[in-house]
Image (tube, rainbow, N blue to C red; front, top):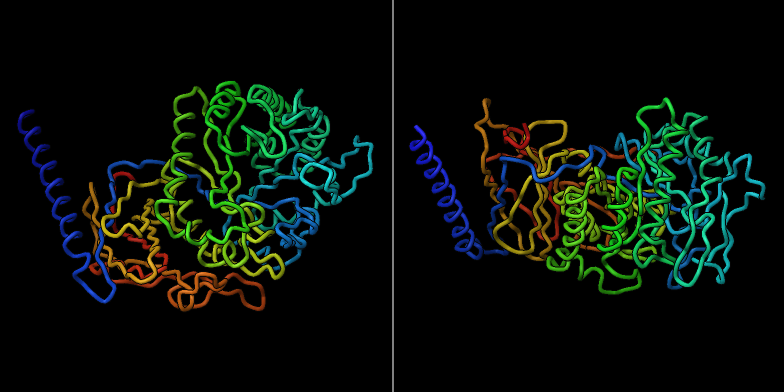
Length: 526
């Protein structure tokens, strides 16, 4: 009996390898055999087990503190998008957040470590940030009035948002050459947290500090001291939320990945930290004229995988139960680049980041920003959704928690990711075509699939393009139709095409395709 099982397994392995060999050779033979700028390719989905998991509310966006006077390279792109002055009565803003049901929103950014909170025991005037080039980050300290905090929470409750609040980690520290030393003075923060609990505002997580780890931005805090400060935050939350369940997450450090620093921090923080966050601005400064070239270069996009993998290994090999998040990612730093980071081309970078990070067990990915700068999901002035808003919404609605291993064979210009489908059966495949002239007819090859017990259903496809392949357009098309809000500020429906499942997935030049295959049954998804 055992010998027969071994023979059967050997036969299965042989047939799998044989089919793999046949398909790969078919790709090599047919890549140039169709003509008219069309190639064939195959996406292989390994269905025996999933390779990572994401939160159900994986897609996250940020709101920042920058005042209108925040300018980069002579351009001031923030307008009234700050936590202190954003129009919370705007219908488009409300509907844009509600469409996710829920959207995680991280409140923070560079100036968060200069924010005080106007609680009863704060004995100073609660004044906003003032431009001062002699100060760190070019602004004075600023204060969050409690009435504004009340307004923000009223909006978040109506919108169904899950809030992560970034606390000032520099309070009480002495700023010396290149570093901030001494323990965190949490008096003002604790008073603010207790006010929040008293008002029954629901906070999903409290994050300590912004970009103070490793070499830091502006200044840096040692890993040892940071771990001690996070332990203090944990104690505050345990006491302030006594009798409240579930308690908010303790999140840190919210900065750029440095393997040595992060390893020491994770080891010393132990059970004090629930989520380890890092930031990504891998496309260079917003003023750079070569951002588009980097986005369309597969080898450049691959570069960020090492960061995701390193952090995953640090968490896996330590005693911590903490998970990894991308706490802030704007791609191009210093507010992005108009008509690049707020245009169609950015969806190739953004969706690739979402797909790639998920394969390395990143549980949440926070885009800088929901609104503000040149990289907002919404236009800073009009609140109209930019192309990446719709990309984020489709990823959120279609890509389920379990991440599958997906490999593409054919042109190197196709990026492929796959998840178990969200809130439905089957799987969803994400395909990005970075080529400006080649259409790719993609066949799906499944390993370890179970036979469906019902008739074959149509495949649901969502094709994202722009007019005339204008990468710098701020108008996105779904299946050939312009996506835009109506006069009431309603987010448009995102409906699929119904496609014969026997036909290949056709991925046009410079386009994005989500393909939901509803009747595929994989062990990884059951």
